[in-house]
Length: 134
Image (tube, rainbow, N blue to C red; front, side):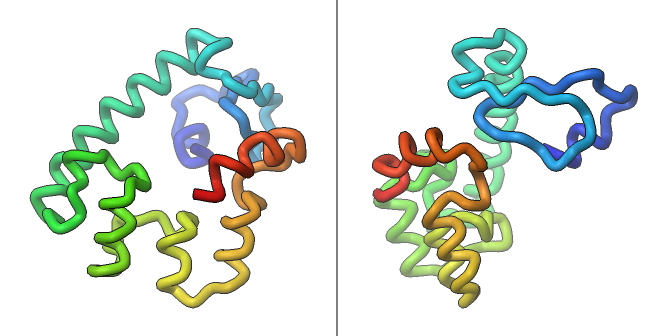
C-alpha cells in the first residue's frame, strides 16, 4: 500500500485507510470497517479484489496444486493443506503465519500470530483475535 501511495502522480492531502495506518508523512484516517463507512474505500476494495482474483486465476495455471482459482488465496483448509504438502511459492506472503514457518523466522511467526505486523490498535486486535486463531 505504501508503494501505491508513493507512486501516485500527485501527492495526497489525506489518506483514508481501512483498519490500519501507513508509515507515511501524509495525514491519515484509519477507519475500522472502512469499506462500510467510505464509498472511496469500498470502491478501492472492489477494484483490488477484481484485480487480485484475475491474477490468482492466472497464477493457478502456473501453480495448479494450490487451487488458487477456486479459493482466490484465502486461507481455506484446502489452501493450508497445499502449503503443508508443497510449501510456499514465491507468490505467498511471508507475513502469512502458515508461510512464515517455512522460513524459520520465529520472530516473524510470533509477530504474525499476535498481529503485531498488521495492527497498532489494541481494541481492534482484541476484536480480531478469535478470527486469527483459526
